[in-house]
Length: 260
Image (cartoon, rainbow, N blue to C red; front, side, top):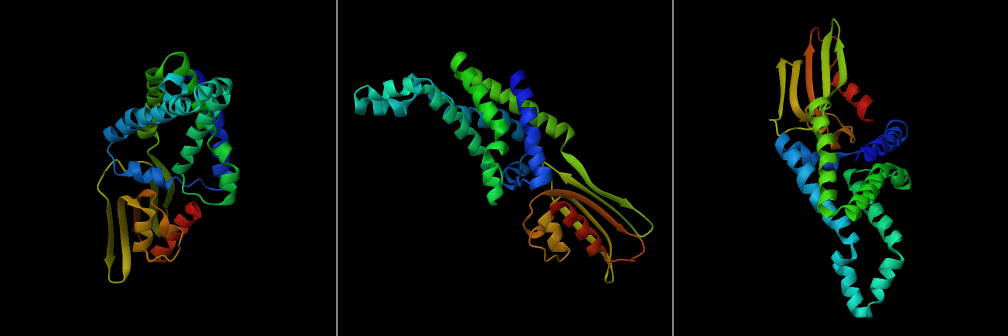
């Protein structure tokens, strides 16, 4: 497990480089799943349910006596499938690891061609995990693989929940206005609030917690198609002090800088 973490940290550096310098990795699908869960549900899902299901699909069949598909083919081919399995087992082992990794591409909503070209690098952490978990499954047994997978996810998600759930996007405080926007990684099933306070036609303040970029863009009458599709969650606090500039423009400019 320690070796897995060391290798995955290295591989994650490659993924971070792609995300920072080539194109943004859109993780909206998985964020949508976790945004409506509380902390206990997230940990239960990530550290118990998902590891068991994934190990059942991708590691349980690595032992021939548990592989019902090949047992069926073995019956049809009069034991030829069993011979084929053991002769080419290394290939099957790595194919299961690669299939496990490629399945994690569904965590992202990207559809550009470069995303698919770089897919092996994007899921390199999962390829490494697939290989190490496969080794544990073969050497120690199925439930040891589930345990390692669960502990791995428990550590990652616990650290994310405790230390990285809120990241500051913007903090501006001048004589004209103050604006603070924080990105929220997990909604934790908290109530969504987004209030706009006005005096006549002037926006005095906008206060929002656990809202989405899309909802905020709609409130600000944005026509930007990228912002109107973003489900990333935000906490926002805007105070207009002098009305010297259009508040909608101020906030949308900051959002576009981050998400475009």
